Image (cartoon, rainbow, N blue to C red):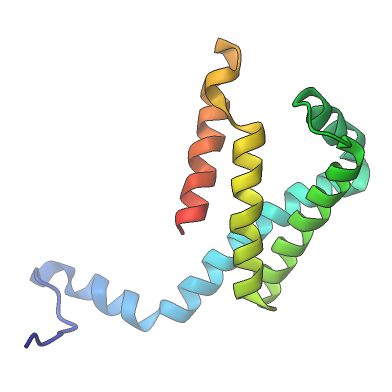
Length: 135
């Protein structure tokens, strides 16, 4: 039988543990808003005039009906952002986020297929998406 303790294994870290334990709700809120802001900002740039560029990017990736899927992608990003920022149906927003990121990563961030000048940026997007999925 194990006993759980809230004390740190190292005395100098006990203040950090105490802060984390007492600030969990605030820290989760900040993280959720920042993550939502990432998606809302991306969606806003598409929905406020950049949808044609996004559709062109999807066309270059050989996505069928790129205009249709550009709108779908932008709206999904918007819903994810709103859900996370406002705290409305966050579990569904998080599930939608994971599904969106799986599709986006599989379609657009296959860094090994890009020209050498773009590999690093695409690799960073690939890893960022994996990190968000793992969150």
